[in-house]
Image (cartoon, rainbow over all chains, first blue to last red):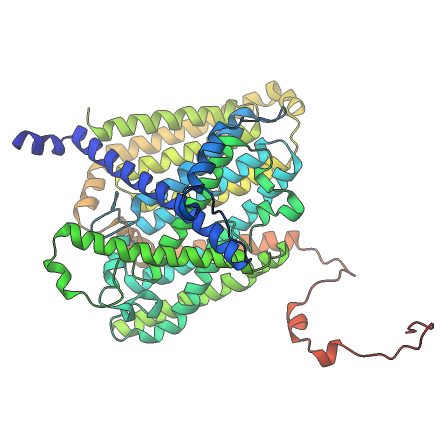
Length: 358
Length: 203
């Protein structure tokens, strides 16, 4: 027993533990993605009064796995004029960047791979890097539609990052920390303490008038940041065929798609953590301290999963019911409406924090 | 060798190699991609120093925004490599002088910083128990707040200058006025006309 304890303390033991945690998170996220993808298609089908995938497995539950095998077995086509290295690197970059953001997500009390001080900045950084997969893929394809799609997405993602950054600043001002675990713990003790309602502390309730609009803007910016409808202009099929994905097939395409969905779920996790208390239950849970750590962990994970799935459902509904934006209107929304509004909100929240802390 | 040393040598080697490839790569887009790799490794080195806030800022600002626009421009410009390389021998002496000067300056600065005991100061900063966000905030917004504001003003002036230089007002361009559009009602936007058969509408 003593030997094993010593081993976990050494660098080698630390590496083994961390690798195990990373694998657990990646596999867990991948498997949930398979079912969320199916849920996305089912919701979409439901809105259009279709049945959606219903043949593979009961209720089509295995559809994503069948698609997975189909993609793996297809031929990888690389266009003749393409830059081979960058062409194959782009989906890999997109896939990897979509997954490393999960390293700082707290799934339950203490269940986080890397509990760093600047967790929220890390998330912002990783989501801002997502644009590279798209822009590299579009350029390396050496084809006009992909290139146009990637240029659109570069401008779009850089624009909406700005407002996402400012909205995150309002949350940081309310909680006074950039550590995601601290942000979640700050929102404990019932849904009225969640950041969307002003972040608790009894006296902060007027901030709900700022934070509710901030939450809505974060959600819309998240749609734009992940290139989801109604902001899916990088792949607008009516004008650009499929944008940056036109020349991709087989496994590279699969990596792009998994990366895209992983980013979407990451955004759902972010909105749950920043505004809706992460793994906190919506009611006070004073008896939780007496539970076994594994049970309280699973309890937290359950609430976190419920919140993430709810926001994913919202993403799916938006995809089904909102028509696509025009590009200039998208830019107008980002720069002329969201940016000034979020700046004003930062000033208001900062002023509130200063004048109420005395 | 502990994990930190392995991480440091890996990141440093990758950064130097990427920096070299920025200059030597034939394709300018590849150069920018290597530049991004160099930034990224630099951010990793910041994390090893315990300056995780600076590392994240480096990624958000330089990799996430500046380099994207850089890549954007390089991809859009169709650079002619042959004509670019034609003046290579002619400009090389100037380039060598400039880079030599920069090298000497860098060595002098790092030598001076190292001899005054910079490494011990990093440790002292880590031992105060404040996160480096608090420390940077204290320096920027408390100790040197006027200089910081002045730097902000300089940037603002530069930004206004750039906007003034690129702003063009083309006469006769019809623009969408969102406020007008949403203020339109049925009364102001619609009129029902009785048209006699076979005559059409005259203005």
